[in-house]
Image 1 (tube, rainbow, N blue to C red):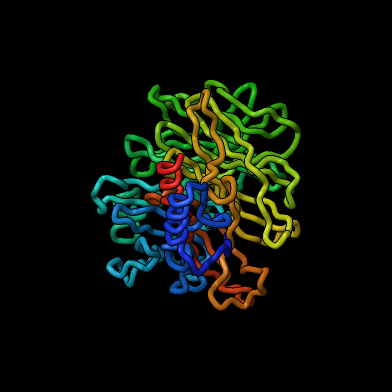
Image 2: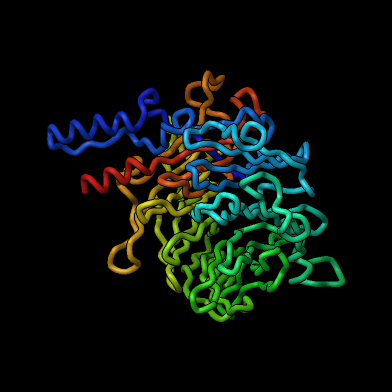
Length: 476
């Protein structure tokens, strides 16, 4: 999936930790409040001031997702459609490639089918149990055909390549449109969009998204798969009150029911809806929904987090340069809280807006929201980042974390060393996703090599969290 990326130039020669130590010392001496810098949000201990562009894989622009590892490193999966290759890159905590993995830190193998990384979802499994040999990344992508298929695979993060025990040698293809909407005539919804992929407690999977056509009509779907990737149940969630257009999040509760968060149509207008499904994925009720206002609304990427919660980014209609407004949705059981986030700051006074977004859990009961920024003309402009401290769903509300950036938000963009870009510009950049990484968050995507070189490179950035925990725990 493509979104966008960028960099914030606040005192780039001095690491965040150095400024924090100096700041703490001054605060202790003068008993005055102090902070780490003008909106610093990246961890400067990672690679080049928080950024890592992988020049080792020039031309690889289709980054799919990432997973952390127990040793403090992370694995990043990318697709190279022109040469039909997958690339799995493993980095250490400092951003250097892990030379002990595969060929200098990168494992490469052949693609099994034509794939579209702009419609993809991933899930990390086997992490945190002390056994790196069972670490896996589950990936689902669109395989573009006359009628799109879903391509599903399980990546072995310990060795690289497919897990041969999954399905028939590591990957599978599913025809969700043909199964949900069979017809002797032309298929009514031949286009597939992947919305999410989520592990089940029994080792199986939930896969969700939307099926559509060239006329713009859409229907949401959700599938339950066995641990080996076989379809066990498939449905189009809908009730008398709401029809799903795009299912983005799903979790099975202790009661055996599945809660699915989707963009829904209520009286023909889009909003969010939380649908309760039975074990066979048949719709039971609309548990909660937004209030449709006749204006555009789209759920974006989300994650399941601890304590049974789910979080999702969303874009409502707004007065930004792109006509959008960022939103964060927090799902607790059958209840949903919607938090309006501030509009993004611009670079050098240029009005910007968020055109796509993702959210993930973070340490300290927080959520990090990442949005792809663009100008009114559609040119990519960097990342919008926000940190939200989760409340209790009752008296303590979810709220922006003031220790992050400037009043809870920030904007960053990547510029290569010795860049050919003019001072106020940056190369085109995209975001594939965001995932929790120990005490930090890992944002992955791709960037053009420079303003005068459109060759794509995989890109990673580590979002700072450790200094936030120190500030909150020591001075609040």
